[in-house]
Image (cartoon, rainbow, N blue to C red; front, side, top):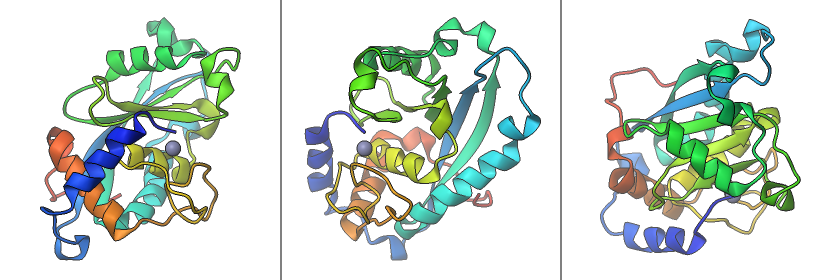
Length: 215
Ligand SMILES: [Zn+2]
């Protein structure tokens, strides 16, 4: 799910002139902080917060985005729950997700923040969505995903599409389908062009040098 679909369409329409097709361009690498707030104060198995697991997740995400010449480079941040009561609480309303973005955002990296499973009693419960992303142009940027879906590469690749200004598409086979299945991975050339343009227009500080190895 994403906010401000109309804005996303405007971004797409203005993007087409200035960007060459991905095949002729160097891979665009974007840095991401993946912030995990442990769901309890009990220690988790190290496999649950391991860098290897994160690299595996982004291997899946980058396999989808490679068709656009885009790669994401994650950095794992594991935070102790009792140091940040807000993130440790299960969010119930969309408004709380903006507060989390506001606390965690940094100019130099995109943000994925993993929270506790959501409390479905308030506005987050009405949609059935497991992740929300603020669209470009919103003051606070970032993807918030609830704990059970934190390793869902298709879902997070979809949310990164919103992060890069893409709106929903109709077909199930498309990455930006409103509901994501295993085979929802397609990206059109038009979407690739728009996504690369959005990265340059909104997230320039998150673009990394291309000397690092892709995950
Ligand atoms: Zn969506």
